[in-house]
Image 1 (tube, protein in one colour):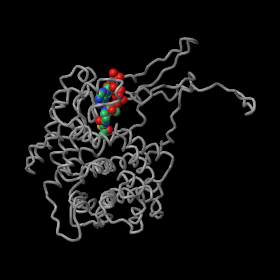
Image 2: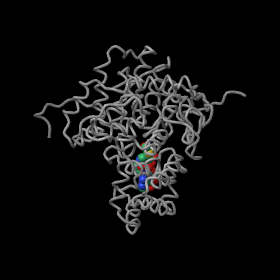
Image 3: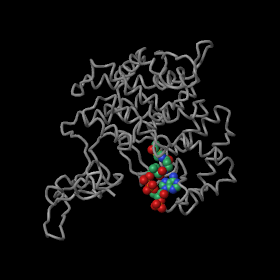
Image 4: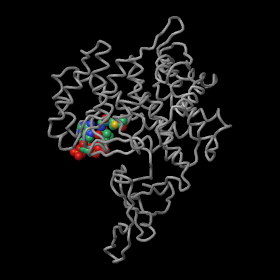
Length: 432
Ligand code: ACO
């Protein structure tokens, strides 16, 4: 079959050129506009990058119309049912599901790196007790570059691998340290005899003065949430990691940039905002009032946990998390959770409303995740840290993919300039 292309004609000059079309393995074709400025002297304009493929990637695929999410080709539903967060991490980083021996080596490598330098631990004392944990986590992750000069050559594949193991192993320890600092409790060291999520729960909830037993139901629930949050192709925080990393910045700086970008309520911060919103709504009687506010363009209020740039059908992760909410709350004997009831009712009302139907606004991954985190005893200010913790694996996979690509260039978007034209400096005495 002849290669597809689009012909572009400049209506003023009549000049034409062929823009090649590139096809992926699945998904829409993309128009290669790299020669546009050279041939026609124009840029493309796409604020928010709604239709711009910023890179080629082999990691994650989303079909927003069909509600499909694949990690390295595997449907997220299958991974959620059968896999584990460690196995999914290996898959995202290496491209294939591991053989038993490879998984054991990977898990052992992660366990080997769970402790953080004691000096790094002291950084937390510089924060006020009520500092938001995201501020502490992003600062401490950025500071890690000051500790690992021996293994930060981004062009050395072994150094990149050590970085990947370090950050994936240490981010739960950093998150737990931020949590303990907020509470004023002593830091709890990692336990390498526990699996990834059990160790996280242990570091969060154990105290030196009493025994603590990790509830396997809690660990399983967390593991599933982490699988569902592990990657989501070129979202805002992942694109931030790629952009920061494209300058050759050290990888800890790039991940810290991702943590910072993920904190906004339009992105990873939505899980915290959803619970705030549900508490504000309070009872089902108030739902119509808040739905009306969400539709009112002058109110600035949005239904948090609703809508997505890519999903114009149900977010498959939200469906899985909603099911998990039922299971987890039942297992914990808290089936009558009023916030969950309210969330279900709000979803029902919104999905029947013409405004949400017309704009294809459905619950996203974070509409229900905060309810599970709450049930597990994780405080609201830590929800977005949980998002960042799980997404670190995706960020690392994308950073690795980008750095290993010989065609990598610095990310440098252009603009449509609408400021003043050239003008001459006037002396202050001559200004009005
Ligand atoms: N409540 C009310 N109206 C909404 C909502 C919402 N949650 N989301 C979108 N809309 C409306 C917009 O006002 C717009 O209406 P208009 O066409 O009349 O102007 C239309 O739907 C399209 O929305 P955009 O803002 O253009 O969509 P965009 O793709 O830019 O934004 C986003 C996507 C940021 C997720 C948005 O839906 C939103 O703010 N949702 C709430 C926050 C949230 O839950 N974020 C988490 C996303 S998942 C994640 O990142 C982990």
